Structures are given as C-alpha cells and as structure tokens.
Picture (cartoon, one colour):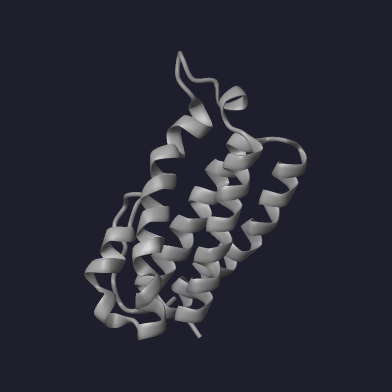
Length: 135
C-alpha cells in the first residue's frame, strides 16, 4: 500500500464516520459525538499529512504539523490550516474526558447538544477541507 492510498483510506473512513455523528446526536449521546468527531478530525488530518509525504506521528493532535508543513499545500488549503489546527487541538483536549470522564466529570451529564453540534460542524469542515486537499 502506498502513502497515497493509505491517505485516501483515512479520508474514506473519516467520511463514513461522519454519518455516525447524526445517529449519536439523535440518541442525545453528546459526549460520544464529541469523541467520534475528534477521531474523524484526526483521521482526516493524518490523511492530509500522508498525502503530501509526511508520516503522521502516533499522537492525536497533528494540527501543528499541518502548520509546520503548510508549504506543501495550495493557497486555498493554507488559508484554513490555522482553523483546522485549532479544531484539532480543542477536540484533542476533549478526547479522554468525553469518553472516560473523571470523578467530577460525568460525560453523559456534562456535554450538551450545543457541544455536539459544534463538534459535528468542525468534523464536517475538516473532512471537506481534506477532500479538497486530496483531489
């Protein structure tokens, strides 16, 4: 498998997972919407890195790497990389809390429909950008 085909595979997975978000939202499972959105964003961004020949690291927030290697992208992608890096960082911070919670943070009680809606918007934005970056 080439870097290019693996990159496209990540994007296919990210696109398919977007559909899951709507199901979770209908179930009012807001914490899992946030968690799944983070994974979608991670897949899409790692695909974008692979597509330009950068081996993604084994950590979850790779937004900073997109900024570091922005010269590998076209101007219409570069203009959105700061926003994408912000989304990646924000969702990364929510990754464990949204899934496991903590003694004083119950995920099913803490996350709201507004949190879920924002995560869905952000995941869709990132996937659309990745599709544009990987024609």
